[in-house]
Figure 1 (spheres, helix red, strand yellow):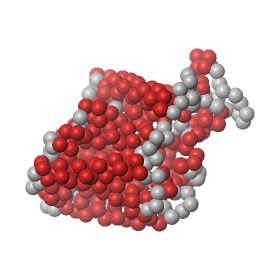
Figure 2 (cartoon, rainbow, N blue to C red; figure 1 turned 90 degrees about the horizontal axis):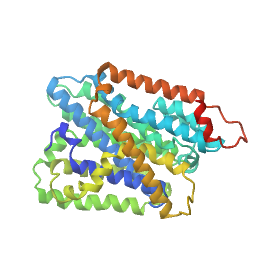
Figure 3 (cartoon, rainbow, N blue to C red; figure 1 turned 180 degrees about the horizontal axis):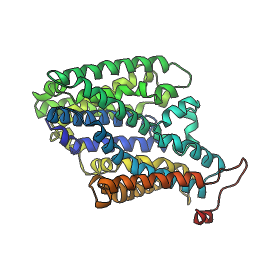
Figure 4 (cartoon, one colour; figure 1 turned 180 degrees about the vertical axis):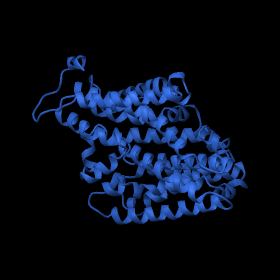
Length: 396
């Protein structure tokens, strides 16, 4: 079994992340109605990787430095997010209509506070029918993950100490996942399923199933499996996930909120645990091949940028429609993701000189202040106002 510190670098897990983001891109482009389940796989992966790191720190040091953990999460997520939000506001000011710009300006503070999902729920902004005009609508899932990062390490730190700690963490994770499932079943019966789909409590089941998969009881359960046995289980699991993305008919799929999404997350957690145990098997090599792994390495920036690109790129554009438009939009999203990775994410992750120590925190603070200043400087559109000319960008 790979150690927790290596899990983030297992090619198969990067590849799973790449498949998940590809499904989301195709879903938002209108080509895969069940592709939204890729977000569910993101959640499971996050729960698995973060819990593994927390348990490794607890085993090695006897405690978890929560402040340091939250600092690492902030450095990993917030710089690229701040740049994307600021860039999106500029693009919206330049090219979008007043309704789109106005909603982006209203949503940006909630995105900065990592609570956009609850903002949408409170404002009754239906995910399935209203998100097409909200440039930051996709950030609800980033908010869910951040809220998990705030709460779950505290739980692990409290129940994971001492003999049998990992077993207790596993029990808490599984129990929490089932409570989350019950909430989803109850809330998913509503006409508008946004509350069940975007609620932190209802989506915690995916994160917690991933967390359970990282604990010693699960590791021990799969430790005795041979590579052949792992492949025999992983191939149908992977095939089942892919088929579910193709055959699921959006939010109207029967049983989706009555256990279907839970079953999808459970299959994802089992697949992840098995691939982490034997990443060099047939399934691991296939999922961890060059293209899925490359997409996985770009997945954060790709997820951040694809939705603003999709909304701001006219349909059709330059005579391109259908798959031609999709290829153009994904290409632009990939370009933005590469730039984000090279100029923001990698320097922070690899500890470039400007991103370390106090300089790093200062850079993050400056980026936040600049984003806030930009948000305050853009004039709020008046009803019936036209699109703002690009030349106004020079007066910021």
